[in-house]
Image: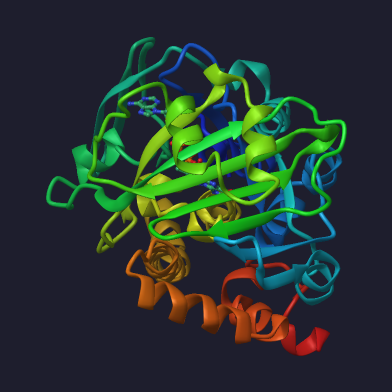
Length: 393
Ligand SMILES: Cc1cc2nc3c(=O)[nH]c(=O)nc-3n(C[C@H](O)[C@H](O)[C@H](O)COP(=O)(O)OP(=O)(O)OC[C@H]3O[C@@H](n4cnc5c(N)ncnc54)[C@H](O)[C@@H]3O)c2cc1C
């Protein structure tokens, strides 16, 4: 088969992973990124065992693990700092083949960009038009136009590709709460384990990064677009400054200008992720709330699956239909599950909070891990290695 060309729109985690997966299977790839450089925001990211498995298929799991932190234990605490549930990373690795790894997003992006030929990465290339008729696939962008054999729309929550080719699809829907993210300066004595603390309509979580830094995240139920009355840092101090240790000490170690804030959205289910020779991938296809820490993990799975489906067949449209069948049910189920978990985490009515916390306290770790099996025990298509709970029990 002559070498085929793929244009990937969007150079985030999903787009870069798709480019790597296709490049490794002999495709000529170009990644068109709107921003002037390929970079990620100043926050951490959790990569669960299923994402490590996808990275393994891309030949990048070791490089990513080397840049990440693997905490031994963690869990959920109540508003007074008492443990509601615990997780054990060694047990996670035993059941699902990999531990939970947390790293800085910029480090992950560097690993991904370095796995691609430099001339395939086109920053400052905002895509303005994508046209797909039977004989001609055209992508117009700031630097000119491309006529590839395949287009991958990996341009995120507010995807231009989705708007152009799925004109009837509903737009993103607000989850009802906003999120702050930040990374502390290196701490002399970082907390021994990470935790998410559940309050009433508010949550605060933290987890280790390499080098003594901590990645922190917080949520609060608010109408979309609500502006903080002061700086985001001052808002965090006001809301969380008196929460149980180590939250105040962590906030004290955050540079005041390093707090990121984003309202959280997910995407109503699309009837298909593909149209002809155009496929949506990552947040463009299935943006989800971050409650399960699965958005980027699912984008990595998408990338591996897409390349597998296209391998060895000249019929791109048929391969994309297989990709859609493999990816849509799974990602849409995880999106729904993440939204449900978020609704529980954001409960604010005191009797409901008491009930939630009691249920969490009474749930044993094995039951929590078992309930995560459908999400974490992903097997890449074509990969003979399976990491199912039944085998590891
Ligand atoms: C608070 C929060 C915490 C999260 N935590 C986790 C976590 O711990 N673990 C996890 O797995 N996931 C997490 N996620 C989700 C994760 O960040 C996303 O799912 C993931 O980054 C999606 O990657 P993507 O490549 O699909 O999209 P994006 O990262 O949005 O990338 C899209 C890219 O396309 C570019 N682009 C957009 N329009 C155009 C255009 N017209 N032309 C060219 N380029 C364009 C953008 O500039 C961008 O670079 C979290 C999300 C949030 C909001």
